[in-house]
Length: 335
Image (cartoon, rainbow, N blue to C red; front, side, top):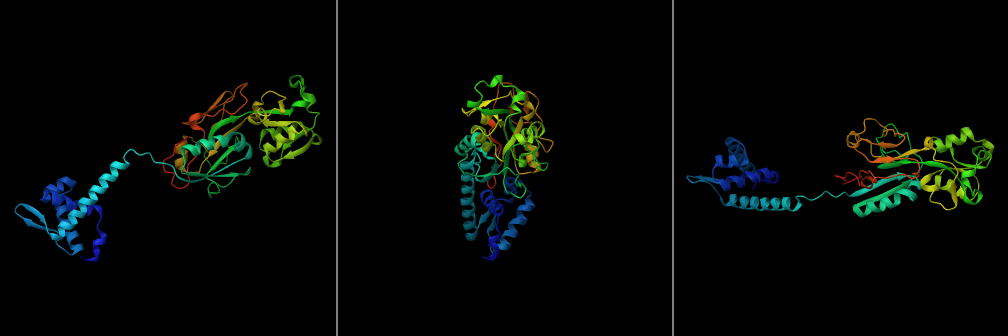
């Protein structure tokens, strides 16, 4: 045989098998759903490339030569293997796999995301999570991270986000210093020592409030992490605003004010920015949809609710995290 035998494709073997099974070119053509002349032309081309005759024409039809019998036997084995493989994998669910790098901040990771990541790992054991803690925005386009989970009302314009919760904020102080927090006057609070987040988090409404309403000399401590802020309040350095999912879980802190609606922050996930992502999310703009005073919904997405007395971020059990995997994660919707 000539070296051209390496160029044979599965369609060539299918044609050879069809001619051997049907014994006539018209019948083989009908089986393959092609024209009679096409079968004739392709068969002659295959024989030319192999340098050997595969069939002899008799009154009873086409009969394979000795070389043709070898090729027909190979074609039959290939057909069985392909049919068996198709039956075995039919109905299988594509399993996500690969490495997934997620960037978020420490407060969301410790108080909200770690239990969800644990559930994610239970359900997607072949996905390797790489968590990057950073307050600054990493470059998703350059693959510094695959997904960013942030608390912000203003996601970057080049990303498409899905809001998964609304985070409520309130003012907190050390419990031993405020045994009757409901009796504390607002003007008296402005005279106390304060702690605040640093300027690198200046876009948060809690930081803006302190800058606009609290005298600079009253703010004796700044820190660039919400967890550090909670620790400072717990140690009595000053009072300050915290997300309620952090402040309400600490026995050493008490809430000194009602929920601050103007400080509520959306928590959302931003995947790799692509047109396909926009279509999958159902969002027509680069930012996640705005919330109303009572509820918020992203088209085709989970619902986040903030209402009086609900001092936490509610999460949809069916949509805890919306994450596209990085390598072999070909068919992954949402957990």
